Image 1: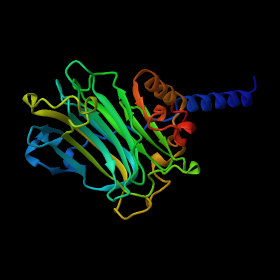
Image 2 (image 1 turned 120 degrees about the horizontal axis):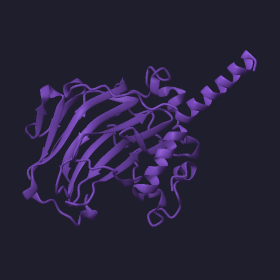
Image 3 (image 1 turned 30 degrees about the horizontal axis):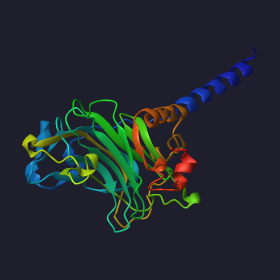
Image 4 (image 1 turned 90 degrees about the horizontal axis):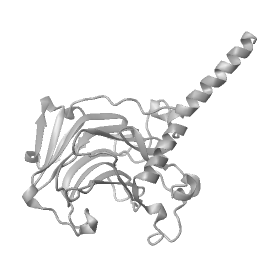
Length: 294
């Protein structure tokens, strides 16, 4: 075999391997809470551990609590490691989300819905664009989120929003402006997290109420990673658009391996998907049809 042919075969193999595996988001950088975040309410229900590298939120019958990012961001990669309230957590919600700050707001949600002892947590995700949400998807997790820390992250660029759990994609919301589907692209968002009582809806549609004899409920956090394009609230574009790692071709879509993992989540762990709810939506939403998310 000629040397030219050998190099040609090697190049084809390299491209094949690269396209098969693609690129995962860059590894989060572990930083202390105070680097990127500030508390927002009920400061006495927040406990700092290990020099501020870990944080605990407390919920009791008087109040919950929460925190937010110091900056606003237009695209990026945002991650936290979390350990959810253990035991009988029915009625509680632990939230990690991004949101802009106007009436027609954009929002990207992780919401962990507590449950009675012995029943699994439910992770609900949602995407709001132009003030409209109603795109709920719910899954069970394949581990106990109260035992150890696990990573929850969002990759958001001009092409897609991807929700990850331990670097496994559990949901993708694509930019499908050609179908008339709004996409969050021009409203900088802050990052928020909170622990609060929502027993009017969180567990079995509000049938299960919070048992305050089990309080305080405690959510733990560490690794407060933010890698985003920081922008003023009024900004309509990122000054470095197209130059950051998350803008590059490898991050404009999932690769084949990531799609297989997403399919695994959809088939094995999904318990509700607005795309398949013909009672609420007699006609499937266009993004569901394009993404075959049903």
